[in-house]
Image (cartoon, rainbow, N blue to C red):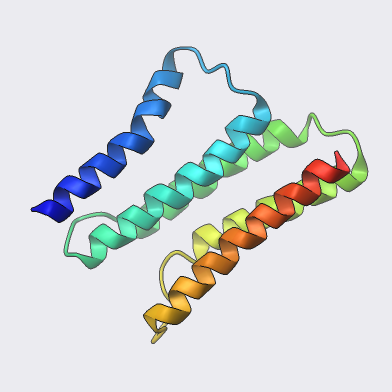
Length: 137
């Protein structure tokens, strides 16, 4: 019971800012792109956790929806980037984000320690590539 309440609380923390933006989304294209990656990674991680606990969440459909959402925001944002090194850095960031999203489900026979380390490494790579993009832009 406590686990379900914790999940609902976490979902609410993530969903409420998105709902409040639905009326008039005043975020910049950069914020929308970063938000799409962050939201997809968070929601699909929760979907995976719920599926592991016997819930009905479809992790793969979450990942598929996340890829579509991230691609849409990436396409909109990348059109605004003029410098070739910045455009290249943004593309690397996009690829790392999609790779992290695709890697939410554990690999066959992957131990929890290795899974957690891989997830942390993926997030660190995304963060590093964003810094590179900001430096090049």
